[in-house]
Image (cartoon, rainbow over all chains, first blue to last red; front, side, top):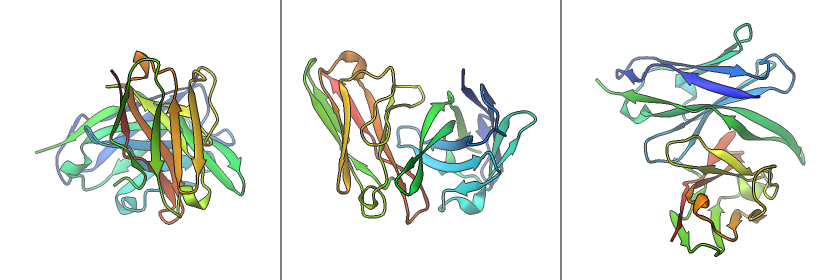
Length: 126
Length: 111
């Protein structure tokens, strides 16, 4: 059974760096074709894609947040880590990790996200 | 901010059919990128209900159907049931942003 679980601080102060961990089970981060993504959702608002890391180490970021985000993986622990620097109140959100399922659509390798972790709520406040 | 626009809410009586819309642009849906749909119950993580515009994963009732035309996509729910009450989000890829984008979300209410 494929599962993902997020962990991290519930409260972070403005300007600090947020570090979130996604612990994966049921699949290996080093297996070919495996991709894991981070998505967030501010309270009462829509979903926002943040970043993706692939089995071969390729990384992709939301261009609006690229300068503040770093995604990495620890294959020995089967974990994916997302760091976000210089957080502010607008970064208050539930952060989800999800497996990205890839398929060929015409010329493009597209992805949908399944399954998702349960999410972890991060509040940025002094 | 969301690049894909959805109607904020839609409602229907049990048994009725409702249609949710997702409007994009020439850099995402209109460029040929597929649309995927997710259902989110209050306080829980989203779950996908449609992938690749029209495909329904196992376990999702055939009451759910998806379509795409031009710069828009739709999710139809027929035979509306109380368990369908949730928020629904569309998702696609945007070439100008080089990333994935979600819709603004539609709240489905069963009267």
